[in-house]
Length: 155
Image 1 (cartoon, rainbow, N blue to C red):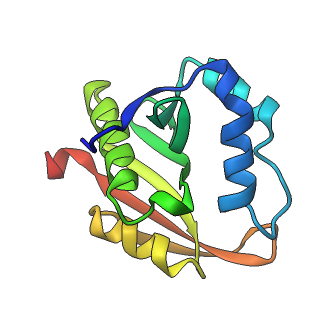
Image 2: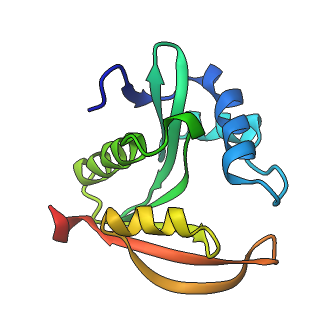
């Protein structure tokens, strides 16, 4: 783990901060869809984990993953700009992947903007494979890339 950082499940009162981070770090140019109310619903949802990386009381990053019968879907992942390139994103992904494996889930799927080359490279470094290019995935205007990782093959 990263010194001074604790990763665990989000609390309901974390929803506004997570939503703001999504708006500012992920959704720029798309409109704000991951509102505090939507994030709060996911914090309370039994089939979804909203993980946060905290330094003291401050949320430095988060990941939202929904678990299905045989696979999981990473819905969002963000790390505060000041904390990037320090392993925090990797630590969040490892926490989420370990949770998926413990639940018997073997595949994680996610999407990234086609133009977001740093995110795509990050996921490739973690073993994700770009599986499909989808035109107009984001707001019917921007292309996306679907990625997947077989956790069982990597375990």
